[in-house]
Image 1 (cartoon, one colour):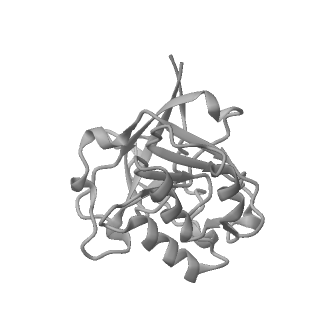
Image 2 (tube, rainbow, N blue to C red):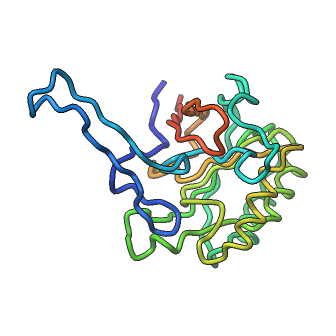
Length: 218
């Protein structure tokens, strides 16, 4: 069994939605200055780096971390899809790929767009997804409970109104598909990943959760 990280580390250069950098790390106790130990304070949005969007993000009565048990975060039948975006909002090019894939009990779908988060010229030009993708997935793939991507958000910064619709479509509390944004998908062949494990930071009553994601390969 081999394991790889599918999540980014967080640092002060971590990009956020819209091209912002908002991670602040402050060494409040420093051994190099004579303190007994090192201690660092972090200030950032819960929607930073590889993170989950919870239904509470767009619904006042939506679920937070306490609504999901430990088993929810283990995905035994992941479907990885490579898509070449035709525009900032992805729809038909994803449908054309999924139309050829029958439901085999997949429990998560993860899309690789090739978005380069390190290119500052593209920091406010991330790809997003059309709201209709959520209903398509619910109708065709009955067991899918998470939708992941390597782009910064399901909402393209170039079309924020559509992005809000997409968030609401996926995160509908009646049957939510939790969003996993800003994944690290630089492994050459995602088809060999047979299992995905997500370890979210467990913070009560939050709309987003930074997380570590691990892919297992047999």
